[in-house]
Image (cartoon, rainbow, N blue to C red; front, top):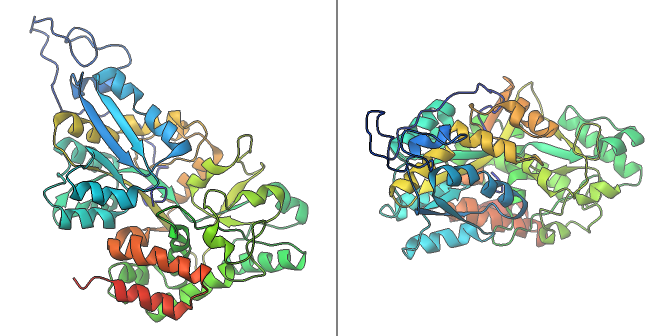
Length: 462
């Protein structure tokens, strides 16, 4: 989920100058024709502040439609990050964010009404589109590919590639292996941030003994209801079974109901389906299924629950005035490993796919893969909650202490990073039965075996 959805280090922060060759290039100085360029000045003269945009050419009067699952608070920053591109090129970016993105995008593509650009939160969805609608999506432009080669780790390019063709450039990155808590309330109660999984369970038991409810959770998300629970399972698989088994699970080299996955679901259930542990400030276990993921962590502020597992982007959901800092109202700690010295990290992100090869579409796709956009997005995200795997971003442009933490985890040599499994699986599973069966697991108390057997049965034959 984009809202999900990191594997390469945003903490690697060399500022790199980008030279794109896309679009109408400025004529040479010996061309005396006084035409107007993308900067709104006579050709050869670059408007101050538009130097990084001059190579996109004059896109005046051109429009690019963008469809994405990034909505509400995050949408404001997204749209603002395009302002300079629009000012300097003359293009208009028409942004549409939707909570029904996953369900509606395929409908639009199938009906011939695809957007120019879509931000795909699942590489599995990209694969589905390429395989089912190959004539509706276009390969990434050479300029986009050059930016990805320069600013991203190879693994990111692989996630945007189907077969031998590169389609979709990475956009933002999500760090999912975090647990939100209140530093002040932990201090008052005498609890310490856990360094191991066993420590975390011990603290949970102590909170229960002290009369509290340690965990709160919510998995309601419109048409995407269930995805937060899949993140839980994926994080546990990485920790209980290890990255090699995780990779085999994602690629279906082992079945979805393999004993290793059964064990992982049980470990997650020891928290999420434990009536003593959940759902603090909200209700019983079943209330998790009907609680909006955006609201699920808020009881921490009132001391009604103590811990909430959620990604870095949950930072944007705390009410205005909440201090997100190590000594503030809320902060997050790394979801500990179950054993060993490695740091398993679950990540996600969005990928920019194009459905039209018009020059202005190619230009905008290339821009979004550049260090120019990454730094602009970091600057305008003043409230924090956004990180990227683009190594051209200046870490000083990242807004908050927590964003710095996310970057440090990404850059830790001990981190073993894997992309969100449901985002990599075939759409029938990753955004289908995996989501829906997690709802059944919580709301209907469906057994671990029945849930995993049902998901395995849905895996496409080829």
